[in-house]
Length: 218
Image (cartoon, rainbow, N blue to C red):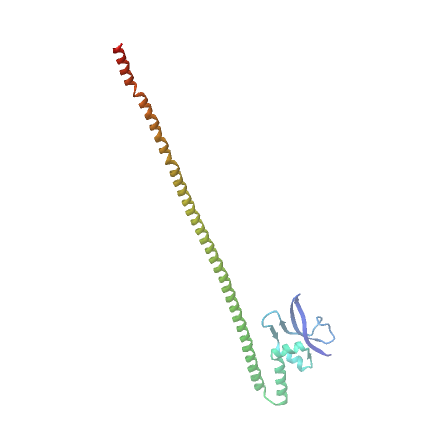
């Protein structure tokens, strides 16, 4: 029975999640399988791959053929390297201890690279967040500055309006004083008109004198 190591799709629409399985090559892609060897989640960054290395190597040694994608995942986790080292051990090219050391060194280096990538992504996220916060603060500061400028302009306009109103009131007061001043001059002639009345009455004593003189002569 030919066996394939391949991916079996799970997860939601738009967010696939895969199982790495050993299955009969004649079975449907998402049908029955012989053994689940691990998982692959492409939605994380970096992608998360979890493989049971010894079980996968065992199936490879039994003649199972991985698909291209499955082979990439197996290589990513060191399965293909261990399979190759086990072949060297069987041929006597190296001891099992040497093979284990080489595999451990490779896995350690691989983990360091993965961790460096994660750290880089974390730093990039932190830088992006800091930049976003700085941009938001700049926008907020600009809004506050614009609001302060508008308030200052409003206060200046209000002060100018108040000053203009005060000047207008002062001008109106001055005009009223100027308009009322001639009224005193117009009243003055009243005394002059009244004065002749006194002069007209003044001859009365003289008329009485004349009448008295005429009486004496008579």
